[in-house]
Figure 1 (cartoon, rainbow, N blue to C red):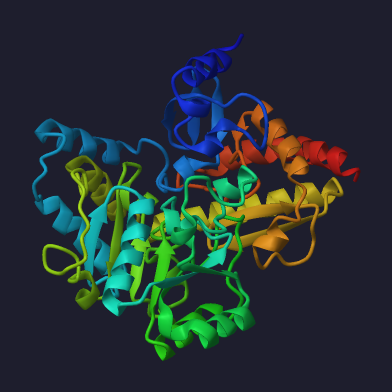
Figure 2 (figure 1 turned 90 degrees about the vertical axis):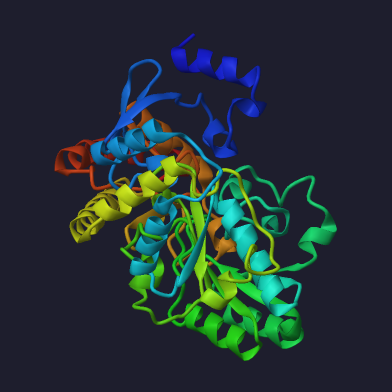
Length: 433
């Protein structure tokens, strides 16, 4: 029995499913999960000592690559001063200033530990600000695992083949109105029927949890138009896209064309450590305790190690870093499409900035959750394992974005590209191409 298999057996004896987050279990792709022992740059190494070129990147935070020396040094220095104080630190203010510098609409920022907390708090804040109960979300968009937002969630929920989650009371999701992504008519109908009851719309401004599904032109602008007309708030969930697809996230790529009331950030903002944030209008953020009546708290919120990692990451993530990630993404996505075309694999590759994913066995545009789920995940399963055997670690789900970093240089990309033709043939065999 291999080291990974032994590790998985040991973990399953004490951890549900052997993992601390469901998609890691390889449930949709099959096989034994890779247990990582260390990582550096664009590489991870498993417990057997085998090296892989990594296209997961801790699901987004590793913008600079794994274990960037300056980020590690910043965390080590912070750790030497103390792990957690349960008291304010100047590092929190410094990181909040960096967030506001990049996204000026985030006039004030509150730090939490996870994207789930950030989205949960944003919804609570919207309800507190408006005095309304209903929240609109889009099918296939994932905003964490709080009860109300698990209605028709994407990402791991789709991967596991679940309609939602057991343990979520019907009353919790009854306050959530679910609309197909990119469906302007359905959105207008919801506001026409329930507009005076809607506290907020929460959206991934470029969806990346049902695979990558960018908004159709004008869709995000319509969100702003309808929410403004009906006195509701607009929440941009940029946990994935924030500070990854540009210095100012997806909002920056839009050129500031839309003015959300609230943002949620995660992943890159914490530099790989547990940290997320809610940002937005000062009058809204000031509704949070201790200033206002909306309660939110957390012993480890804004902890000194995570803020140190976030500060170092945002300071290092300059224009050259974003240009390198964009270039690497363009090179790799073109190589993937070329390999699949050569093998005769029907597919649809979609991008949102440097994020991209492939929809297998489909060729037309994927605009929403329903069309995303029409893909052939069996083809991805074959592709995934062929790439893994060749030393390339992809997300263990067809419904996830692929993540590159500034450490994915030409030599790394050449090695990944070399593995693509064999993997494409494996996918073709499944599809009968």
